[in-house]
Image 1: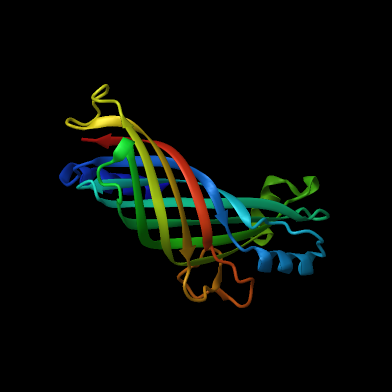
Image 2: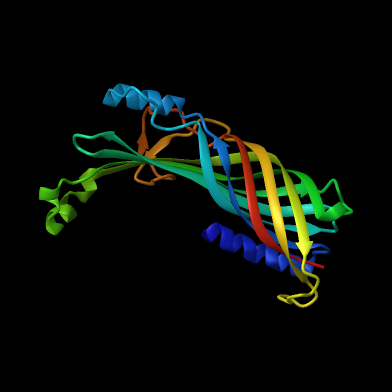
Length: 246
Protein backbone atom coordinates (compact mmCIF):
# COMPACT_ATOMS: atom_id res chain seq x y z
CA UNK A 1 0.00 0.00 0.00
CA UNK A 2 2.86 2.41 0.79
CA UNK A 3 4.29 1.69 -2.66
CA UNK A 4 0.96 2.59 -4.33
CA UNK A 5 0.59 5.85 -2.36
CA UNK A 6 4.16 6.94 -3.21
CA UNK A 7 3.65 6.00 -6.84
CA UNK A 8 0.50 8.09 -7.16
CA UNK A 9 2.20 11.08 -5.55
CA UNK A 10 5.01 10.93 -8.11
CA UNK A 11 2.63 10.42 -11.02
CA UNK A 12 0.41 13.30 -9.91
CA UNK A 13 3.47 15.58 -9.89
CA UNK A 14 4.46 14.38 -13.36
CA UNK A 15 0.95 14.95 -14.67
CA UNK A 16 1.03 18.56 -13.56
CA UNK A 17 4.44 19.20 -15.12
CA UNK A 18 4.46 17.23 -18.35
CA UNK A 19 1.20 15.48 -19.14
CA UNK A 20 -0.55 16.28 -22.39
CA UNK A 21 -3.05 13.55 -21.75
CA UNK A 22 -3.38 12.80 -18.04
CA UNK A 23 -3.00 10.65 -14.97
CA UNK A 24 -4.77 7.30 -14.54
CA UNK A 25 -5.11 4.68 -11.81
CA UNK A 26 -7.03 1.45 -11.26
CA UNK A 27 -7.71 -1.28 -8.71
CA UNK A 28 -6.68 -4.65 -10.19
CA UNK A 29 -8.02 -8.20 -9.86
CA UNK A 30 -6.56 -11.00 -11.93
CA UNK A 31 -4.79 -14.31 -12.31
CA UNK A 32 -1.10 -15.19 -11.96
CA UNK A 33 0.58 -18.46 -12.93
CA UNK A 34 3.16 -19.57 -10.34
CA UNK A 35 4.74 -23.05 -10.32
CA UNK A 36 4.05 -24.43 -6.84
CA UNK A 37 5.08 -27.96 -7.86
CA UNK A 38 8.37 -28.07 -5.86
CA UNK A 39 6.68 -26.69 -2.74
CA UNK A 40 3.73 -29.08 -2.99
CA UNK A 41 6.10 -32.05 -3.34
CA UNK A 42 8.08 -30.95 -0.29
CA UNK A 43 4.89 -30.68 1.80
CA UNK A 44 3.73 -34.12 0.62
CA UNK A 45 7.01 -35.73 1.69
CA UNK A 46 7.29 -34.02 5.07
CA UNK A 47 3.65 -34.29 6.15
CA UNK A 48 2.47 -37.43 4.33
CA UNK A 49 -0.05 -35.55 2.19
CA UNK A 50 -1.77 -36.92 -0.90
CA UNK A 51 -3.06 -33.80 -2.63
CA UNK A 52 -1.45 -30.54 -3.71
CA UNK A 53 -2.21 -27.74 -1.26
CA UNK A 54 -1.34 -24.76 -3.46
CA UNK A 55 -2.67 -24.21 -7.01
CA UNK A 56 -0.54 -23.01 -9.92
CA UNK A 57 -3.24 -20.55 -11.03
CA UNK A 58 -3.72 -17.86 -8.37
CA UNK A 59 -6.08 -14.94 -7.86
CA UNK A 60 -4.28 -11.64 -7.48
CA UNK A 61 -5.22 -8.23 -6.09
CA UNK A 62 -3.40 -4.92 -6.41
CA UNK A 63 -3.33 -1.60 -8.20
CA UNK A 64 -1.62 0.41 -10.91
CA UNK A 65 -1.12 4.01 -11.96
CA UNK A 66 0.30 5.63 -15.07
CA UNK A 67 0.84 8.95 -16.80
CA UNK A 68 0.42 9.38 -20.57
CA UNK A 69 2.78 11.99 -22.02
CA UNK A 70 2.31 13.54 -25.47
CA UNK A 71 -0.41 10.95 -26.23
CA UNK A 72 2.33 8.35 -26.80
CA UNK A 73 4.61 7.62 -23.86
CA UNK A 74 3.26 5.77 -20.83
CA UNK A 75 5.14 5.90 -17.52
CA UNK A 76 3.81 4.17 -14.45
CA UNK A 77 3.91 1.36 -11.93
CA UNK A 78 1.91 -1.62 -10.75
CA UNK A 79 1.82 -3.86 -7.71
CA UNK A 80 -0.16 -7.01 -7.03
CA UNK A 81 0.15 -10.21 -5.03
CA UNK A 82 -1.30 -13.53 -3.94
CA UNK A 83 -2.03 -15.09 -0.55
CA UNK A 84 -2.94 -18.60 0.68
CA UNK A 85 -3.28 -20.32 4.03
CA UNK A 86 -3.59 -24.09 4.48
CA UNK A 87 -3.74 -26.61 7.35
CA UNK A 88 -1.11 -29.31 6.81
CA UNK A 89 -1.23 -31.18 10.15
CA UNK A 90 -4.65 -31.43 11.82
CA UNK A 91 -3.29 -33.08 14.96
CA UNK A 92 -1.27 -30.03 16.02
CA UNK A 93 -3.06 -27.52 13.77
CA UNK A 94 0.08 -26.70 11.83
CA UNK A 95 -0.75 -24.06 9.24
CA UNK A 96 1.27 -22.77 6.30
CA UNK A 97 0.62 -19.25 5.10
CA UNK A 98 2.15 -18.13 1.81
CA UNK A 99 2.19 -14.55 0.49
CA UNK A 100 3.98 -13.20 -2.55
CA UNK A 101 3.88 -10.08 -4.66
CA UNK A 102 5.63 -7.72 -7.02
CA UNK A 103 6.04 -3.96 -7.37
CA UNK A 104 7.23 -2.78 -10.80
CA UNK A 105 7.86 0.53 -12.52
CA UNK A 106 7.34 0.43 -16.28
CA UNK A 107 7.71 2.40 -19.52
CA UNK A 108 5.39 1.87 -22.48
CA UNK A 109 4.57 3.18 -25.94
CA UNK A 110 0.97 3.81 -26.97
CA UNK A 111 0.43 2.37 -30.49
CA UNK A 112 -2.96 4.12 -30.84
CA UNK A 113 -1.80 7.74 -30.31
CA UNK A 114 -5.05 9.28 -31.54
CA UNK A 115 -6.93 7.53 -28.70
CA UNK A 116 -9.57 6.18 -31.09
CA UNK A 117 -12.85 5.69 -29.17
CA UNK A 118 -10.98 6.40 -25.93
CA UNK A 119 -8.74 3.35 -26.42
CA UNK A 120 -5.02 3.07 -25.72
CA UNK A 121 -2.88 -0.01 -26.33
CA UNK A 122 0.70 0.08 -25.10
CA UNK A 123 3.39 -2.60 -24.93
CA UNK A 124 5.61 -1.95 -21.90
CA UNK A 125 8.68 -3.20 -20.07
CA UNK A 126 9.69 -2.65 -16.47
CA UNK A 127 11.65 -3.77 -13.44
CA UNK A 128 11.08 -3.88 -9.71
CA UNK A 129 11.11 -6.04 -6.58
CA UNK A 130 9.42 -9.35 -5.82
CA UNK A 131 8.96 -11.02 -2.43
CA UNK A 132 8.03 -14.56 -1.44
CA UNK A 133 7.21 -15.29 2.22
CA UNK A 134 6.21 -18.60 3.78
CA UNK A 135 5.08 -18.73 7.41
CA UNK A 136 4.55 -21.95 9.35
CA UNK A 137 2.42 -21.52 12.47
CA UNK A 138 1.23 -24.01 15.08
CA UNK A 139 -2.05 -22.96 16.67
CA UNK A 140 -2.17 -23.29 20.45
CA UNK A 141 -4.81 -25.65 21.89
CA UNK A 142 -7.44 -24.24 24.23
CA UNK A 143 -5.67 -25.35 27.42
CA UNK A 144 -2.49 -23.43 26.42
CA UNK A 145 -4.09 -20.11 25.56
CA UNK A 146 -3.27 -18.44 28.85
CA UNK A 147 -2.01 -14.96 27.96
CA UNK A 148 1.35 -15.22 29.73
CA UNK A 149 2.05 -18.63 28.23
CA UNK A 150 1.29 -17.36 24.75
CA UNK A 151 3.78 -14.54 25.21
CA UNK A 152 6.52 -16.96 26.28
CA UNK A 153 5.97 -19.50 23.50
CA UNK A 154 4.97 -17.34 20.54
CA UNK A 155 8.49 -17.12 19.11
CA UNK A 156 8.79 -20.91 19.01
CA UNK A 157 5.36 -21.36 17.44
CA UNK A 158 5.98 -19.33 14.26
CA UNK A 159 8.69 -19.83 11.67
CA UNK A 160 9.03 -17.42 8.75
CA UNK A 161 11.10 -17.92 5.61
CA UNK A 162 11.34 -15.50 2.71
CA UNK A 163 12.95 -14.53 -0.57
CA UNK A 164 13.48 -11.10 -2.08
CA UNK A 165 14.76 -10.39 -5.59
CA UNK A 166 14.81 -8.33 -8.76
CA UNK A 167 11.89 -8.92 -11.13
CA UNK A 168 11.79 -8.12 -14.86
CA UNK A 169 8.39 -7.59 -16.45
CA UNK A 170 7.11 -7.36 -20.03
CA UNK A 171 3.47 -6.88 -20.93
CA UNK A 172 0.73 -5.08 -22.82
CA UNK A 173 -1.65 -2.56 -21.28
CA UNK A 174 -5.13 -1.63 -22.52
CA UNK A 175 -7.15 1.45 -21.50
CA UNK A 176 -10.68 2.50 -22.30
CA UNK A 177 -11.22 5.98 -20.89
CA UNK A 178 -14.34 8.18 -20.87
CA UNK A 179 -14.02 11.72 -19.40
CA UNK A 180 -16.94 13.46 -17.75
CA UNK A 181 -16.12 16.71 -19.64
CA UNK A 182 -15.73 19.09 -16.72
CA UNK A 183 -18.71 17.61 -14.92
CA UNK A 184 -16.55 17.59 -11.82
CA UNK A 185 -13.34 19.65 -11.46
CA UNK A 186 -10.77 17.95 -9.27
CA UNK A 187 -7.67 19.62 -10.71
CA UNK A 188 -8.06 22.91 -12.68
CA UNK A 189 -7.68 22.29 -16.40
CA UNK A 190 -8.18 18.53 -16.16
CA UNK A 191 -11.30 16.40 -16.67
CA UNK A 192 -12.24 13.58 -14.34
CA UNK A 193 -13.25 10.33 -16.04
CA UNK A 194 -13.79 6.60 -15.66
CA UNK A 195 -11.17 4.07 -16.76
CA UNK A 196 -11.40 0.38 -17.65
CA UNK A 197 -7.92 -1.12 -17.69
CA UNK A 198 -6.54 -4.54 -18.59
CA UNK A 199 -3.01 -5.89 -18.75
CA UNK A 200 -1.34 -9.16 -19.65
CA UNK A 201 2.31 -10.10 -19.46
CA UNK A 202 5.10 -12.23 -18.12
CA UNK A 203 7.38 -11.60 -15.13
CA UNK A 204 10.81 -13.14 -14.73
CA UNK A 205 13.18 -13.34 -11.76
CA UNK A 206 16.79 -13.87 -12.89
CA UNK A 207 19.30 -15.87 -10.89
CA UNK A 208 18.96 -18.06 -7.80
CA UNK A 209 17.22 -16.58 -4.77
CA UNK A 210 18.22 -17.75 -1.29
CA UNK A 211 15.74 -18.45 1.49
CA UNK A 212 16.23 -16.32 4.62
CA UNK A 213 14.69 -16.61 8.06
CA UNK A 214 12.44 -14.12 9.86
CA UNK A 215 12.35 -11.40 7.17
CA UNK A 216 16.15 -11.03 7.34
CA UNK A 217 16.23 -10.51 3.56
CA UNK A 218 19.51 -8.60 3.45
CA UNK A 219 21.20 -10.21 6.44
CA UNK A 220 23.21 -13.36 7.02
CA UNK A 221 20.45 -15.63 8.32
CA UNK A 222 20.40 -17.79 5.20
CA UNK A 223 18.64 -21.15 5.09
CA UNK A 224 20.08 -23.96 2.96
CA UNK A 225 17.89 -25.95 0.62
CA UNK A 226 14.18 -25.35 0.25
CA UNK A 227 11.91 -25.40 -2.81
CA UNK A 228 12.80 -23.39 -5.91
CA UNK A 229 9.92 -20.91 -5.73
CA UNK A 230 9.69 -17.59 -7.56
CA UNK A 231 6.86 -15.18 -8.28
CA UNK A 232 7.38 -15.44 -12.04
CA UNK A 233 5.10 -16.57 -14.84
CA UNK A 234 2.22 -15.27 -16.94
CA UNK A 235 -0.46 -12.96 -15.52
CA UNK A 236 -3.65 -11.19 -16.53
CA UNK A 237 -5.28 -8.32 -14.62
CA UNK A 238 -8.51 -6.38 -15.11
CA UNK A 239 -9.26 -3.14 -13.29
CA UNK A 240 -11.67 -0.26 -12.87
CA UNK A 241 -10.43 3.19 -11.95
CA UNK A 242 -10.40 6.90 -12.67
CA UNK A 243 -8.36 9.34 -14.70
CA UNK A 244 -7.55 13.04 -14.98
CA UNK A 245 -7.09 14.18 -18.56
CA UNK A 246 -6.84 17.36 -20.60
